[in-house]
Image 1 (cartoon, rainbow, N blue to C red):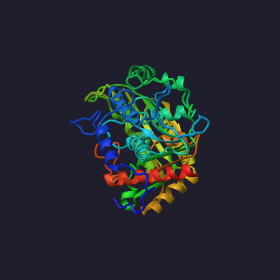
Image 2: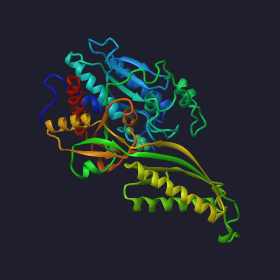
Image 3: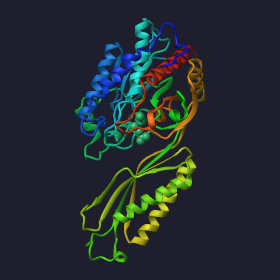
Image 4: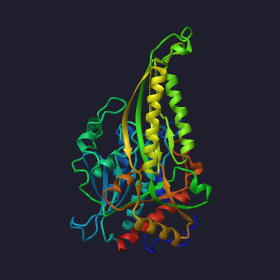
Length: 419
Ligand code: GLV
Ligand code: MN
Ligand code: MN
């Protein structure tokens, strides 16, 4: 740690406690075999994570509330709070992908609590109420779309539609939310933030490679998710000549190769097939069916549209050539977002004041800030990720870097409260 100027002589981040809580939350859903932890939205393990965060909110004597989509809010009220002034909000998520690191999302929520704790420890109240949010189902691996809690909160999806979402395991989201006891009564969006700040690990390689301490995130990429189903014909692997095959597995592989070439030629576009399922999935049978997902991302909306169009044209071409049927289902579509310039300037000024190297950047990961930016000025702060690794048990950021990021967050909060 190389803090040259702390945010305020009286308000301090308790870095040791922040790191301890990250470890403690990270124990929930731990997988000793594969590594990491798995706390998929609205499962029993995620409920245990929620319970712990809510316990910590109550220990800080925050006003704790849940909305109908299960978002969790803990508010430290200002003395003058009569409900008419919007709170400053910090937040992120505590759900995870499979075998995840301990930091993705959890860092932003627990650093928000560390900021609130600094006020409590100093015995002062903020000039404006501060709310820490943990949004439901940011990862979107069980129920799509991702960033669902913050999307509903921002009015981009009705709560009824979200509750009716059926997951990849056939469960209804609303039933699971009630089952784990987090179907709250607040209407999503009832608390409109004055401003929103999200601290997060970078999940990419840039800060580490450039030896930079703080990322000032000024934009996020657009995200396009689809599910593609290829219907071919099963047949005997040993007797069916290649020219007579309608091989759904081969078509899936051809799409994957096409997407890699598209990504390489487009430069900024990223393309991933993360889920692939073939039937009957047997060694000596030509696959009759392939179902796979496509994740496309680009910082530029027109280039993202171009990638979608090129993929659609390729699907028509390959279906015709191979004699298969291809259908597509849209799962997620978010346009790129440019964050609030004033907040980005404030983050940059705090990093500069505290003596941390910093740079402006964009990110390709989905974040709740992307949704909240629809209803309030928003921006994000990044700290480095070792090796650029995330969505992986090896995700790591040094403790000192985590504490530095929380100190920047506290400094920005203090500045915005004074503005
Ligand atoms: C969530 O982390 C995503 O970017 O998909
Ligand atoms: Mn995240
Ligand atoms: Mn994630």
